[in-house]
Image (cartoon, rainbow, N blue to C red):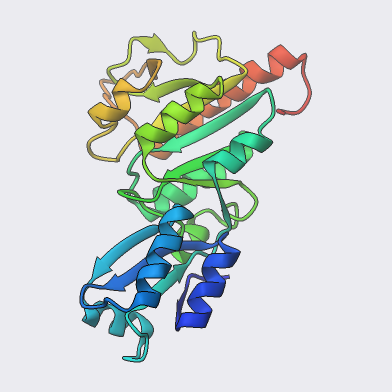
Length: 250
C-alpha cells in the first residue's frame, strides 16, 4: 500500500469523510471556490493538515490541471486522532511522541521499535515532522501498519492532553538529570524524542514532567534518535512487565 494522491470534488469529500488516512490537504493559493473552502473547514475540523501551495505544485502532484484547486495526500498508514486513541487506551500504556523527526528512515525505525516494545501509540504532529510515506513503511519493514499512529495538531498541545489523561511525560534529552535506567516508569508513560539535529524544542521541554538521559561511555554525547528511543522504550516495557508480575507487555 503506497501513498497516493486524490483530487476532484467528490473524491476529496469522500476521502475526508472516511478520514483515517488523509494526511494533508493541499489547496492552491489562487483558489477561492466555495467547495474548496468548505473542504478546508472540514479538514481543519478533522485535524487534517491544510497547506496553501502554488497552483503549479498541485499540477505536479495530480499530473493534471483538472484538480479544481485542491489535492489530498493519502497516507499508506491508517491513523487516529489523539482524543479517540486516549478513549481506547488502557490503564497501563506507553506513548511515543515524536517532535519534528525528519528522516524517513529514522521514523520507520522508530515505528518498528515501538511495535517491538509494546508501545500503545506513536503520536505524530501534523506540522513540522515527517508523516508516514511509502519510504517510511519500507524503512519500518512493515511495522508501520500494525502500530497505532496517532495524529495531533502540535506536540505541545498533545503533551498537555496526555498529562490531563494521567500520563507522565518524559523528554529524552542528553542534558536531562534523570537516568533512564534508574527511573521507576509510571503505568501511563509518554516518551518524547526530538529532531535529529536540534533535539527537543524549548516549548516541548517546558511541557515535559522530567527530562531523562541515557548515560554514555566512550566520550559520546548522543545517539541516533531511533537507537536512543529504543533503549528507553524497552526500559519502560521492562518496568511495566515487572509491575504486572511478568508476562507480555500490556
